[in-house]
Length: 402
Length: 77
Image (cartoon, rainbow over all chains, first blue to last red):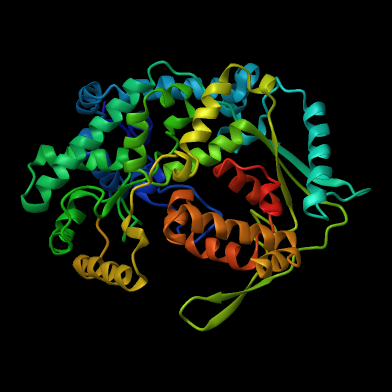
């Protein structure tokens, strides 16, 4: 029986799910101008196959359109066997879910099955802490800080909209294998990238390059709207040669993991060579690790004092333009909101204390032994950056790839 | 030096924190850019903190952790 458009859409979405590829980013959004609508382009609409969207999905998956129309996943299945990453990633995600939801995991899974993405991950607070004691420590800390920064504690005022967040390290004994397989994919993509800088790739190589570009979220630094697929790389070949690009990292970046952040696992810190390799690949990972170290070693409180003056718009100077604009309070980080970290006690850190200390140490200043972050071209001058953006725009001829 | 001490004593706590950050950067990094890269912060934000002070308690807490200092150190140096 011939597969229906619905069957094909389900099949394609499953493939994206198995490969941990961002479907919406690859196929585009149904209403790109509506900032409240994040629904991706469908492959099936009113029972009909949307061929343009299907073609985009096929390119992202590195598969022929015919394979998708026949629900043929054999090529993907055998390719996934080459990289234990995919199987291990699924096990890793389960561990993360376990640490995040603990005894409420079953409840969370049930709600997620019923409500889907309406369930927010951050709504769950670990249950093992005595929050009455943590709250008392918050009050003590505020009073203590008030001695250094008068006005920190508002005597007699109420804390409104109080939110508490914290995080925990997970444990996954196969993290080394998971990371090694991930780095193997990066190595392979780099080989294909280097070959493509001067030569045409074969059909099979193009498929593999495109699939890995989706998995690794390969982007040109100066053109981050779409992943860097082979057709775009061919257009940029001349630009890359002129800029002296020889490998991934010179101009191309891999997006920081999507949701795969190996530093959330304690055992990741057992192998510092791998940790440094990841920071070299993703310079922003040190910042992510530093923020995560704050989250695991402390409780973060956010609230507004009931007597706080409301936030006012701010006048900001636009650098180099000699203009100022009035900017309203940042809704995600309002200036009238108080954010305080309350350190966890040794008892609260439990057996993870040593790993938490290690995480803090590697993400601390290089002057006291923290990891070194490689220089990235994003630190160049604005003029140079604009030149590179224009070079890519000209190479594309102002057109987007399909 | 005396001028420096006098300036510090007339500063708000937020300005003191900014001056302490400035000194830490001068002592431990070759430039503000190098610190910005290591800490993972936009250069313009570093510049704002150094020149105008740090008005968020949580930012001082994060910086104290990054340099393995006590929170109070950002106001007492």
